[in-house]
Length: 114
Length: 114
Image (cartoon, rainbow over all chains, first blue to last red; front, top):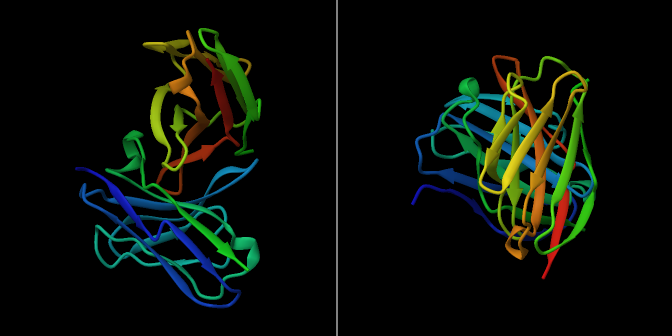
């Protein structure tokens, strides 16, 4: 089944403790992206990647890192999480956005930072 | 301006009624307008999309109406069903930084009561 898989689904951590949220897609998509969803703010892009070893900042990149060492994986790293990073996170992939291909989203990771 | 303004924030409709969600944008560089549907515990999924060269697009009970001069577009759900209860995001796409950047609205939580 074609899908984007995120892990974990739920994560509770404390301020400053480094964490990684994994994302993997099995559709051979070139484009991958991370979004955060907050009430009243919709989906905001954190980072995106056009292909392996190519990543760039989205609209809200502060406090986050990503890497794209393989085509299928695009982990999101929070080196020193803070409470304002408490949010619902989504990974998404697409064959490429040059032709407005639809985004395929994972089922989300709900992160709580205390 | 890269914002997409979406209203209402929440909507309650009786079964069989019409649900209407509105979006507005400022930047005329946007050239593709998708709607995403998100069920609880799931990631958003593409529902329907329109390009600005047409004024309406219909897929089953879902219709997008597009008013280019007013820079507004809306989603109409005819004969709304309880299974349509979800969060709906409008979005707008523009070519920026070498790819088609997608900007999402804040979302509308729709509840269809039996």
